[in-house]
Image (cartoon, rainbow, N blue to C red; front, side):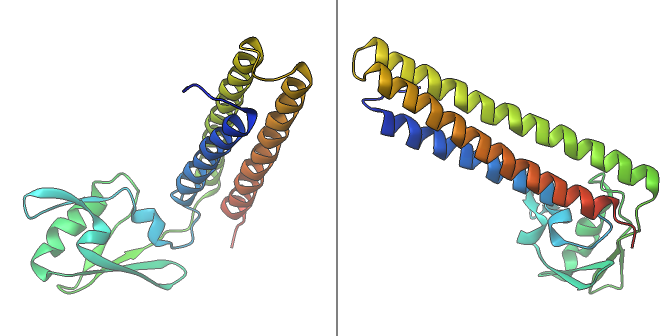
Amino acid sequence: MSNFQNIKDVENHAKGRMDKVLADMQHDVASVRTGRASINLLEPVQVDAYGSKMPINHVATLHVPEPAMITVQPFDNSQIGAIEKAIRSAGLGLNPSNDGKLIRIPIPALNEERRKELAKKLHGMAEDHRVGLRNVRRDANEAVKKLLKDKLISEDDDRRAHDEIQKMTDANIAKLDAAMKAKEKEILEVK
């Protein structure tokens, strides 16, 4: 951590890092399959095209025409085989088919076992991100202690800063838990 001159700098830095942890959690949560079609499911897919690996959304247009179907429209039809192969080998458990112009990916309903497995994975993700938030809190608290040690702030300021950092941490953990619970409900909900 860099040298901070006041509490505001420490709090702003901590807030920025906590926002990044939350954004990362939302990104990870969006990639968890719920049995409902979403183009976010294909985010990890990398296509071998034009001599390099490219994200699928750089070589095709993705659509969700119905709740249990994703369609992939290649920009260049000669890439359709490479795109289909990339989807199959991405480990998403999806089975695409193509008609020469469009790739259709039916999203199978999740069975009970798979739902529980995904919910468990989601809890693991949430815990990893909670640890990330607590690490930010620890770093911020250490920075505040250093300000006190260097006599840049008073003991009252030190106490107030620690309280403020704890409130910020609690609020962010509550947001993280709410996002996780909403996604878990979506996963466990049988349509």
